[in-house]
Amino acid sequence: MEKQLNKSILITGCSTGIGAALVMKFLKQGFLVFGSIRDKKLEAPLKKKYGNNFVPLVFDVTNYSQITKAYKKVKLTLKGANLGILINNAGIAKLGPVEHISSEEFDLHLKTMVSGTFNCVQIFLPLLGTKNKRYPGKIINISSGGGSIGQPFMASYCSSKHALEGFSESLRRELLIHRIKVIIIAPRAFKTAIWDKSNADGRAADFKKTVYNNAFAKFTNYIKELSEQGQDVQFLAQKIYKISMEKNPKVKYSMGPSGLQFYLISKLPKRFIDNLLGKYFLLMK
Ligand SMILES: NC(=O)c1ccc[n+]([C@@H]2O[C@H](COP(=O)([O-])OP(=O)(O)OC[C@H]3O[C@@H](n4cnc5c(N)ncnc54)[C@H](OP(=O)(O)O)[C@@H]3O)[C@@H](O)[C@H]2O)c1
Image 1 (cartoon, rainbow, N blue to C red):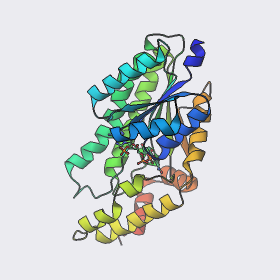
Image 2 (tube, rainbow, N blue to C red):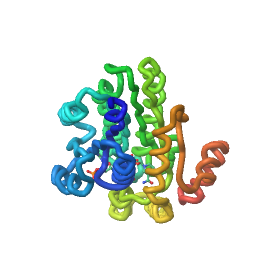
Image 3 (cartoon, rainbow, N blue to C red):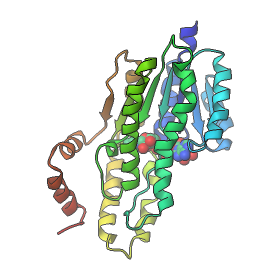
Image 4 (cartoon, helix red, strand yellow):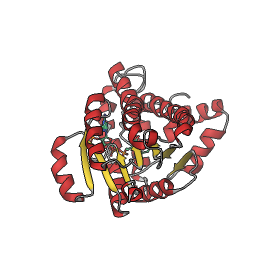
């Protein structure tokens, strides 16, 4: 019976994209799904759409007290059972040259993807098996190709995802003591609203009068093409579900199109790649 109640998952950032696809996948597999949203107005329609096994939680991952409130709701709903899985998925991506983006915008990426993950992990750990050690849970952190490669105009995003991977590695080793597994998933290009939300076209106008004008336009076109060729999020959700069920999962999974391109960028000498990217994105002659 307790094992059955342990078939529960909390996913952050469920209003759209990968989070929404994960909600549907885990509900289909008979999980009790806690899904975080920021907009309270979405609570009722999502509850109606997903049914009784979906419990909406309204919080911003940067807001510790909102998450603490959500923790109490999750604890009450689980009636003494553990939470099976926590997926830290909430994320943002805004593009721009370091020379011109605001420090607030840079900080927001770190607050969302790094501190936000820290907040959720720290607050939900007691439900993942630090108290009741019988059924240790799993933590899945959604990183990105940008978690191991630094792309131009993505310093805020790539720094955050690199930091998230470092955080995950420390956490994975620390949580050996509780037998709680920590897994990094690094998707590449999947079709979601993330790039539309980044308002790349509007930003191009912001940087028009700077030295980056042509390079930024070229880069945003590349991102648009990448996201148009992006894979379906249902496919990713299916893969993540399978990984979450593994008894001995790997520490990190990379997935999505352009695998060879990402592989070569990560393996070839950095100066060589600098030259290739520099020329391709019009950052050098
Ligand atoms: N799509 C890709 O190709 C791709 C590739 C690599 C990695 N990823 C990663 O996958 C994750 C999900 O992205 P997605 O592509 O599915 O984008 P998305 O559709 O924009 O979803 C992002 C989700 O995160 C939520 N969110 C943003 N900031 C938040 C905050 N401070 N507190 C709580 N929730 C917040 C958003 O909520 P609102 O609706 O309230 O904004 C939304 O539900 C991100 O971590 C992203 O970096 C995506």
